Image (cartoon, rainbow, N blue to C red; front, side, top):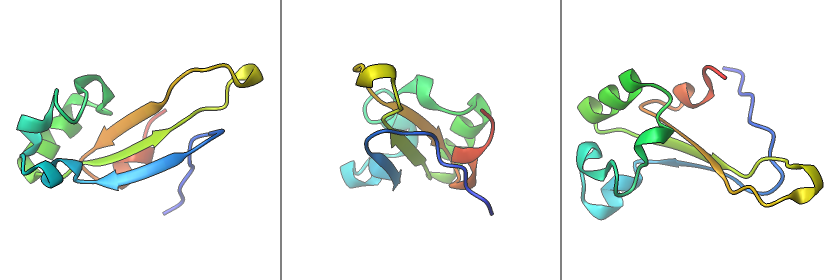
Length: 86
């Protein structure tokens, strides 16, 4: 598998199952730990709920003149899914 990491200027972080550290299931963690807008697709969100597995990638993108932007986050039920699509 070839991985194309997103362009980033500062940190890039990958994590798996952050919800389990809070003794929560995926469905209960949506809106608490995971932002509903960060899923790569509705199908991946539903699969994550069924499998109780969430992979996340967070990065701080390159910005012109290092303008403050914040971070980008993608959520998927699989590691490979983090790198699919755009």
